[in-house]
Image (tube, rainbow, N blue to C red; front, side):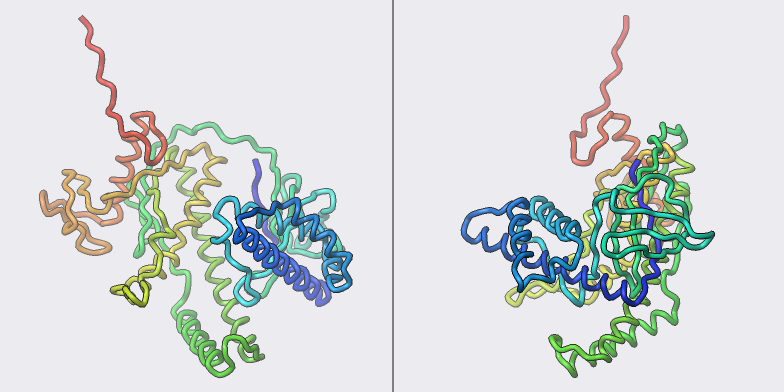
Length: 405
């Protein structure tokens, strides 16, 4: 199976400067090609990846575009391929621009023949990349297979390399272990139908105070210098802000990975809600003509949802399930938090708070997230009992038993 390996790079000053140059070139190619595609769409026409790649090859011969020849050609081609895929999947007008300040530089080397890896000692290894030469990285774990491609990216002021590896491991057979329902919440990140609550604070109280102060400093620098003007003080604040957020993201990723492994090791079927996180975290500000309501409360809820990493946890769950013989099933999330698991009564008033569920019909009391997880598990078992494993398909009844004389 294909899997990923991520390592911390130890770039020299020259290599780090060249990595910034390659990332800037890929960003310029992305924005230029996207503007070209949008201009074609305004005229009712289309342009393909093949034509854009041909025009980019011609542009390299132009003296004014000589900077294109300074970066590896495969990275620029992969940028055009990524743009082509994004436009086909989401539409040309929904693809976003890549900003110099908001988009972290990233570029991919697709050909494994141009990538070589060797281990130096217990802590360090080296990878050879086109036009970079040998680059040292922290050897935190073996590759475990053959490299398919490699992506270099910057996160929190540090550079990483992510290798797509073919590990040669076949997908595990079903393990036959008991099923479990999983509810993703705001107060508690993950609650299971067995009554287990998995949660972690990704930022310490001191880090939260520092985040607020950095946001205030960044806001003052924007008011002083304007959004389109750069200053050294603003750049220093952005670097500190990015490093602190990178540490928080690393803790969130570690929590998601560990929790997912525990679930798929102990259970054969993991049932989760099919949540539309992008729609759930949409802004409630509205428009000038129709302003939104409870905007501040909705913004706080959006931050809480995104802060728990619901989407990342689901990705980890689906990835690790392949290695442990587990199945991840998504069910309709409608009324799972308002339904009493004891009597089946549905009422919004039963959900007293984020943590307390008390049924208004039978008086059953339980942790709200655990009650929801039990409802999710029941929905998953009902779906699998009908042999219908997809969200949104038919809800046919169980076929009646045939009577015998």
